[in-house]
Length: 327
Image (cartoon, rainbow, N blue to C red; front, side, top):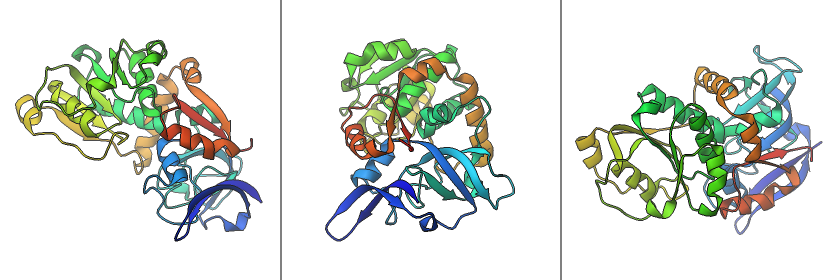
């Protein structure tokens, strides 16, 4: 038996519960993992509360991240006792995920836990940090170097945003952090932001072409924020988009694309190939400032996940939530 968060629904009710499950209820995949830690991401909060169409089948154990130790494996790449981690691949959405003390998953979804990373550090990074690194790698690949100019990070107090600020600053970029919680500006400056701006300057509909400002953008909000970022990105600048916290819609024009030659890159962290995942995690273990990462991380118990999901969606959580599933 093991403890887990389970979401389920019927014709009239959607609910999440902390409960106990039998091991034989796990999916029939080839690697069984003793989970030590998971995370609570924006997508997990949507899954737990039912406020977004995240869960594809029921009942479901949410949790798009997990780290732990292999208990048994029929996959040639993994053996008993090996530390592993998992991000994405539809776990917590289509297949049971990490907010549980045990998980059975496909071996090809896993990667070995990078040397030098503790389980709790890996989950402090989690999908949010991994996604932030994919954005950074995309900017680098498309020639956005520190000398090109300012990088805008939207949703900078959130999981992706805060780690993006941390990474970019460590790599020598001048970071402008946008947030709705301007009273926490000092925290963002301590992470490495050079400037903090109120998200109010970006969230309302704006002109299709605005003053050129950004060499690059890491956006997790979508909607008018992303449209305004496009309109104010400098010639040949690059934007990465990885979230929809403000909304799915994008009311922009072709003007900044055909008159300034900007590029908008979608970042899909869920189904990246194994080689890209290993590269991203190797860079994370090398480039992140772990002392600063600790300052934006809070550890909660599995029993607290349901309540914290509500707080996260209400914008009351700063940074990262690591879930100790044995607490």
